[in-house]
Amino acid sequence: MEDPASSYFNCTDSQRATFEAGIKLGSVYHQFVGTPLSEQNVDIVERSIEEGVRVQPFVEDVKVQIDRSHLREKRSPYRYVSLTGNMLHVELKVRYGDSFAICELSYVEELRYPLMRIVEVTGTKGS
Amino acid sequence: MEDPASSYFNCTDSQRATFEAGIKLGSVYHQFVGTPLSEQNVDIVERSIEEGVRVQPFVEDVKVQIDRSHLREKRSPYRYVSLTGNMLHVELKVRYGDSFAICELSYVEELRYPLMRIVEVTGTKGS
Amino acid sequence: MEDPASSYFNCTDSQRATFEAGIKLGSVYHQFVGTPLSEQNVDIVERSIEEGVRVQPFVEDVKVQIDRSHLREKRSPYRYVSLTGNMLHVELKVRYGDSFAICELSYVEELRYPLMRIVEVTGTKGS
Amino acid sequence: MEDPASSYFNCTDSQRATFEAGIKLGSVYHQFVGTPLSEQNVDIVERSIEEGVRVQPFVEDVKVQIDRSHLREKRSPYRYVSLTGNMLHVELKVRYGDSFAICELSYVEELRYPLMRIVEVTGTKGS
Image (cartoon, rainbow over all chains, first blue to last red; front, side, top):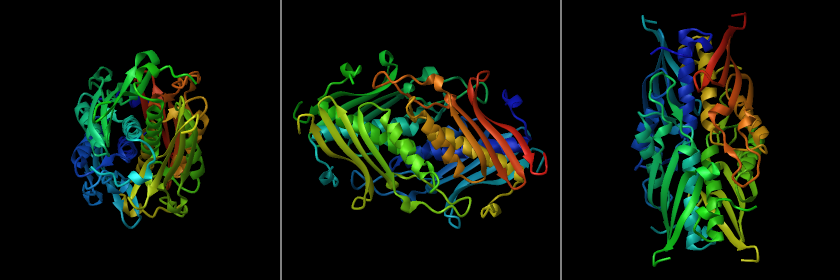
């Protein structure tokens, strides 16, 4: 798809691809952290986050998984949790022009931090 | 369902019912406003918001509708919008003990405001 | 202050007061959970949340405190946290007509839950 | 500051700098859109958003301005608005290693879109 905003940017395709990927991962985290979550709605929340990423520019593919080990069974009215960043695993592929950015959000035990990272940047003609 | 938190409250059932309804409407608004939205994902966003309300305490029923007149057809990478409060219509029924609170979130033209309101409070034995 | 929306409601003043209090507590939680937080900005985040509550209708008073025991000292670029509901303590007083609702959000160890509760409902002429 | 997460990335410094900038702009938008706003709290909201960006990794500088033309004077209890992306102007400078990314979020009339863009990418030894 052509980019009607290209004249507003001053960068390479690979810099743009990683910028766009960063936007999407930041969006997922800060839009959806706090969402009420239980066994009952975890599937639709995953799919809804994915679809919210897909409508944004230059997204080739996205997969969202929520760590179910944090969910409590619904045994009292208060047995649900709020989505946290540590529960989120997101795999994202963005394409801009000739460049692909493969990125990920996942909790890194060593850093005790939900890390957004660049797995790989490749060109359409190979990296 | 019994309420394991009842000892933390000092109010009538009807005051509790309207309090719980207010929490849910405030939650919907402030959790989901900003969500990326197009014709492609508006259905799943509606259902996902509904399911996020249903996992919360004392919700009897909820219906969420998003005003599609604000959506743009996807003709360029930037042809999507962010969910605003003015696009949201939510009907909510909360029960606490003997009381039901029927509440609503909808845009009120006269006030130019997305109003959260109490439509009716009734008792299980009639109001 | 007079309420230009009063005709949209069908309830008592005390039900309205608790409804409005519920809206504000739900708003605080779902708007601000996820906010990046460290020793450097925790004070301004507390005050900013308070001011965001104060601009909403019928708020008489509000106090927001964030539990600093969860903050990490800034020793690496990743040494900050995201605000969670469990870190929030909010005291709120709403007035509607003749009724005051004194409400609170705080983490309840027994329930392992950040509980929004009604501490007291009183009338302007005494409860 | 050294990056304890560097081994998780597979990219150049400039790709990393634009990625980190994208994360911050996506975060600002999706964390704070929806915040209640009036003349009374607009200053503290601007500063609070700035401080929330500054605690995140690799931020050299940030400036947030909210378009006050959308604010209504507080004449009734409902005379406040919710922050939208169209009201936000953010200037951001991120440094990673030898690269700086100068980025911006601002509403672009031509696109009718709050555009996050890369103004310039430079190296510490010149671009």
